[in-house]
Length: 612
Image 1 (cartoon, one colour):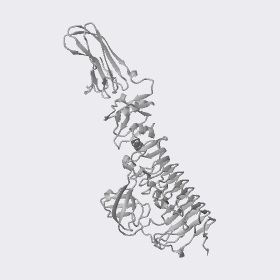
Image 2: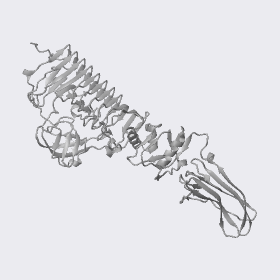
Image 3: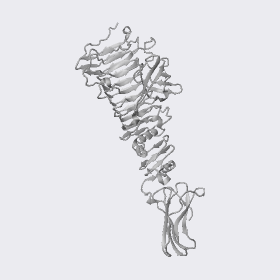
Image 4: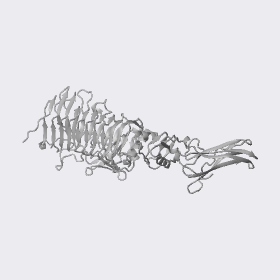
């Protein structure tokens, strides 16, 4: 027969009726010849159908074969997309010398038997996809997407390998799954949500990784919707591994509406190393001569003598044996031993530079197995809205760099994993901050060691409720809010502070002694808050100033319009100086204002100094 075009999605049935007339009997089958657009033969394909023997003269046999692009059940010759046409006819097999009559030879379009014409979808197999997990089916997916013409792309049972970035513009539905190299980005433009990615990759952890990878690519989608689904993670999602080289990414991106749960396993085990290092206050963010530096992970917390709370490894230089720190160390020059602890986070953005990232309406179900979120090393304007942080193992939100600049945390609940421990034994921390202008508004923090440790200035902390008590009689109480910069320009207003205090230090200073050419403690405004304590030691105070060096003083503190109330035993006063390291210079105190406060169960009221 002449040239018959091969069209994706069209399946041809070639059939013939043959009978033996005389001579040697033989078998008959459909034969074919595959040709490409250059009229050359395409080798390596099946070009014959099943053979049917002729057993008697005059008996009519029928032979047939189905030919198409896709490797479908019932297709005798699956040719893929290389041939553009075929020749079809009859092939006689057996001894020569026979005489035969061909009653008919027909070529019919039987595509309706495979792809019902009334359905608005196309199957990737019709465009050459093999689904064997070995053949790269990327071209077939692209061809199916183009042919869908507003309909769906269907991925049937099988394991379809896609190597190379791909964007599917049509809605897509999965019965089978796809696999890709780690670096390959897969963007489902009309089906961009977590359930589609989980189905596509056949794994919840991998599905979320690939969805985030696509979100942080330059696609048309701003938000990744978890669609109310719970995602079970077997291991941390290290964003710099799935999106390498992600620097300067400043397009707004949102991850929203679902739950992320840590499943217990070895992948969440904390990393821990001990090493010596040399510190020089003239290079406040560098720890040098660090032994075993290659083993210490970026993002590790630094612990040791002379180290303030929430100091982290922000970078490292293995060749020079140095670590870059998120905060200076107050302990002065010298070589000391340090411990480095690397916590494991559900979402870990270490090594990336991202701005304008928003995490909204997500339950970070850490359940004492994992920490929640490690912020990018660089960036700004990160937002958390209406999220739940349920029992983070060590930390809820950690910053090792400056991506906390302008961070907003609004309407979230933080539930510590230390709920049942006495205050003195708690170690979890809700948030730490290294940069400026953070807004913490309308949140609830329950029984952390500290709900926030904040360096930087210009913070607004308002309408929150943090409480940290326990059932111990005459019990200890920790600071809920720890401020570690001397001149902070920070407002703490309209909060409910329950069995916790505000502690103001300069522990993140390489030269903690006052040097005369700097600001000392100042710029803190505490207004309109409700302070409560119950059954605490009498020396407990709600506001504590703790200098880590000599010569400091207060040069600006406003405490106005607050309510202070002690239950089940009076406390001595509301404010004190912790002199365990150094005292203040009281002769230089100025700009202190305590006004319109209400005192209940306080033995000694505070009054404004005499103004001269």
